[in-house]
Image 1 (cartoon, protein in one colour):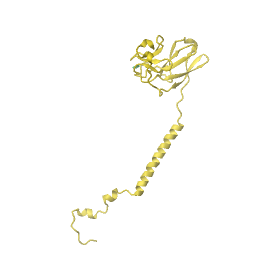
Image 2 (cartoon, rainbow, N blue to C red):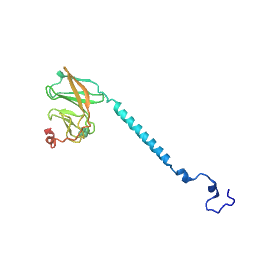
Image 3 (cartoon, helix red, strand yellow):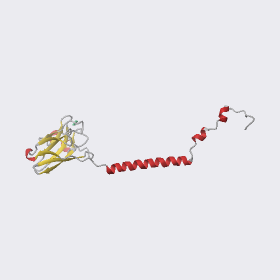
Image 4 (spheres, rainbow, N blue to C red):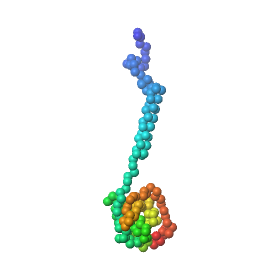
Length: 186
Ligand code: FES
């Protein structure tokens, strides 16, 4: 115990307080290693969880819905239907005796309903003059940024069934030279 207190600029209570801020803030190697280990373990568990979720989550199955009786649709005829839910409006076109195509009716620009123009043999959006190919739904002309989602159709006897939707993730802008200047060329 000190008998005489040496004069100091620090207040007396600081001399007698046994906890020092610098010691409190000091991180030991052990603490740092523990922190790194826990953080790595957390990330590892998180990645495992994501991996398991991706691995075991089934992709949603599309329903099978009857679209039309083939005999009721003439060549170049059209049938409107909904798929996969009652809110998703679609259009089916019989392009030849044995060929049928189906697309979502919702324009990929601002969601107006597209319709089939037999005269121009393409799908047209009346809102901003967007044109889609009837062969694959690709954009021929206008502002739509992506092709129309395509409905997978299967023929079972005299019935035409919708069985799936081809994703629009492979969408790409396709400007057909035959349509770049006028509607009539589509
Ligand atoms: S909404 Fe179809 S072109 Fe704009």
